[in-house]
Amino acid sequence: MLPAHRTPTLDLRWQTGRALDAPLKNSPFSLSKGMEDRRELLSCVDGISVSDERRLLAEIRKLGELNINETTRLSNGMLAQEFAMRYVIGNRRKRLRNMQQSKEKALRRRLEALEAQTE
Image (cartoon, rainbow, N blue to C red; front, top):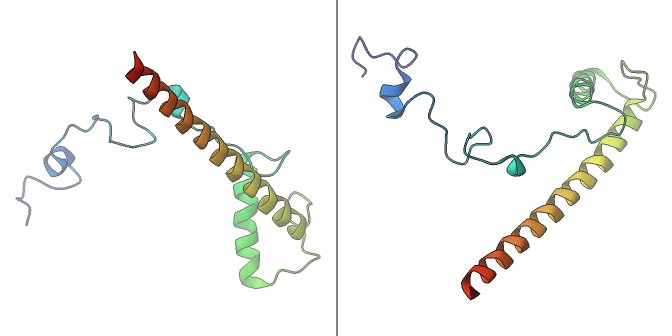
């Protein structure tokens, strides 16, 4: 039980044992990471912004509760079926690209480590 003067909402420092502005380890929001480690937010569907993509996905979720079929149109005029297919293909392409970049980055780090050992 917390003392009366120590509430979790008012004194987070007391609960966590660290300052409120201290960066979290392995957090994507950590201030210690370089710009090259940050991933940019890209849409899976070409020609649609990330916010529109999220809005359309939410719209499909809501329509799915009612009834959705091959003639259902979304708020942007695109068929739900067409958007879903473009999203799945784009998401797979994006995941493959990210996986390839991660492998290349790991290989570069291993090469740098080997070069450092030979010096």
